Image 1 (cartoon, rainbow, N blue to C red):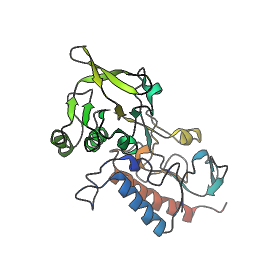
Image 2: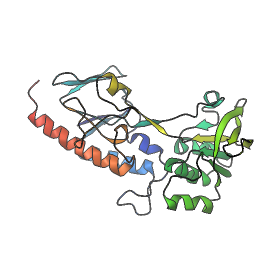
Image 3: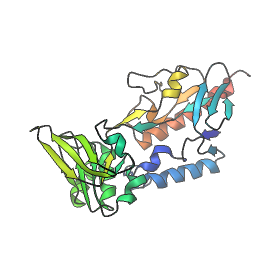
Image 4: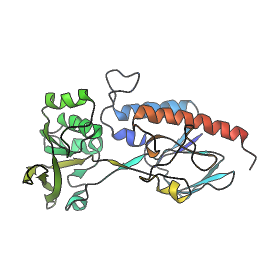
Amino acid sequence: MLVLEKALAGGMLLSVPRIENYPGFPGGISGMELGQKMAHQAREAGAEIKELEEATGLDLKGVEKSVKTASGSEYKAKAIIIATGWSPLKLNVPGEEELVGRGVSYCAVCDGPLFRGKKVAVVGGEEQAVASALYMADIASEVTLITPGRRLHAPEALVERLAEKGVRVITRAKVERLVGHELLERVVLKSFDTGELVELQVQGLFVQVGIKPNSELARAAGVEVDGRGFIVVDEKQRTNIPGVFAAGDVTNKSPKQVCTAVAQGAVAALEAANYIRGAPAA
């Protein structure tokens, strides 16, 4: 088995600060550590993992499939499993693009240490945003979590820890614009309830407002996606193209959790093996 990885083995899992509900780790485990353990186990089982080998093109016609990469290489196989995951959504507000890497980040684990002892904010209302705020509470001098809803959509245990860690939560607010010259200086918020504009002085902003599936290559190669861009699969993780399977967050299945992605990966691998055994010779 060959695994092609755009970055490092583990993908977006490496950016998750803390996973509280993965079986076998009752006290929780960081995404980085879990991803490394998974990669190590896969290699021990005989899988070859090529890191920094980004897929740039798929040819899924015929018995033999082909994957082209940014390095100029081409790999062929009778069965392919697409597990390209997702990418973070942006706020799309004034000042965001100019301040990316200058205070604006989409990964607390990656960039959090750069803001040690500084004031930061996290924007988002889901579990990832809460986990990032908790992670930054141990690094930054002050953390504010901004959410557009009246409540946070995350496990109660995580939400309760926000108060324990001293994280300030602002509800029913959205980011209007980001202000800064060379670096981020402040975030301008608008209250949904009053319409009032409020300025928050911060040196860092971690954007955690949602995801989009990395399904562009698959879609271009003829793989069916739903209205949101997620790859459509059946109960055996099969796509509309024979010999092509998909698993994890790029699929139309929910919930988007590590445990469900692992389960889908197991099903996809078994079905791919069955497909290869019954596939005609190239």
